[in-house]
Image 1 (cartoon, rainbow, N blue to C red):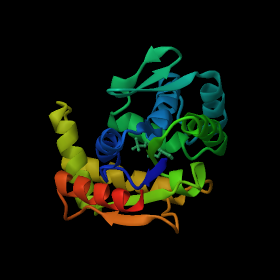
Image 2 (cartoon, rainbow, N blue to C red):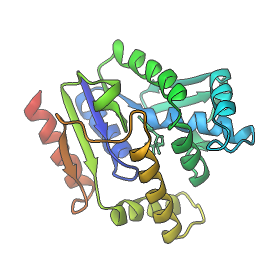
Image 3 (cartoon, helix red, strand yellow):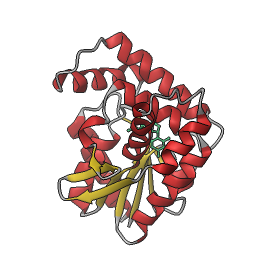
Length: 220
Ligand code: DC
């Protein structure tokens, strides 16, 4: 069983995928975490990814990125260090988006993602899972919501974690990332033709979860 969940940032992909993974007994794989670890590696080396793509490729190629799925969700390791708690900041979000536009980086991470899915039943979330990583996945969902609603959710999530942030800045960052992710030349964020579009703008978390559960059950 393979389920592909794609969509823009803040649409609720990871929280919903985690719950769905438990419910359907699947391994959850958050591919965004891999791009975030790659972005973190570049930030730590002090480079500006957009201006120094060759350096970014070198840094990512020299980095060991491992995604370890476990009961509690997953751990993301960078050169043997658990960086799970370090990759959800606005700075790393932008770095992840920038580094993910580099084809050489994508090719390497996509290979790892396909390997992870080879021997497991997975629910994998990202931007290009249904279109590129797992094009044969029998269930593909494109999850979206209005940009205002997505920014609102991201803002509340950051606030809950005690981060100091402004709503307008969160919205602006999300719009830049949307544009970055959907206009890059190689494997951009795009709805797969054979995917089911789910807009959660008007749905709360429980309603979204119930709706997705029903969609998946109908197709199993
Ligand atoms: O899902 P996320 O917000 O954690 O992803 C961070 C960035 O990584 C996102 O802006 C684009 C990139 N990404 C990607 O290009 N392809 C994926 N499959 C997953 C994430």
